Length: 198
Image (tube, rainbow, N blue to C red):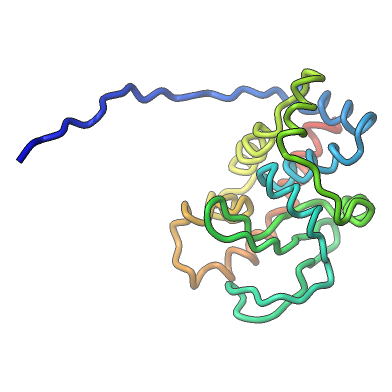
């Protein structure tokens, strides 16, 4: 039998350094110039979601719709709100999944305003490049960095960001993780607020 040698390549580690000042400058500029783009950015910043999922959330936002949620084993409304935050069941499976999107409750007004509107996710990145702003992909990284600093259990951070393939738990613990994420998420919001609001 012939032996085919595998490829040899060097593994490099990339470090993403994003200062809180840069994130604050970006948010301030986008809020003043492009409200819809600002909504995408804050969903990514506070929810740790990818740009495609932020776009999909706004495009298909139906807060009162009841759907079957597999991990709960029951029907429930997509939107659940508490005192200071909400979570929305997006339910994207396969590929890059996104089960829940967490965000501060104050964003509901903007979500209702732009409900049903869709933008090309590449256009959002081009807008950032054109104005020398923080790229959308870095918001998920910022969220992760401060989530693991704020919340002791990394599995809760993985759950908030829908990194379900990385969870070190069985499916039976998903319900527990949902409850833990609901309890811990306000701490993350406070931390992220302090970075961009001073």
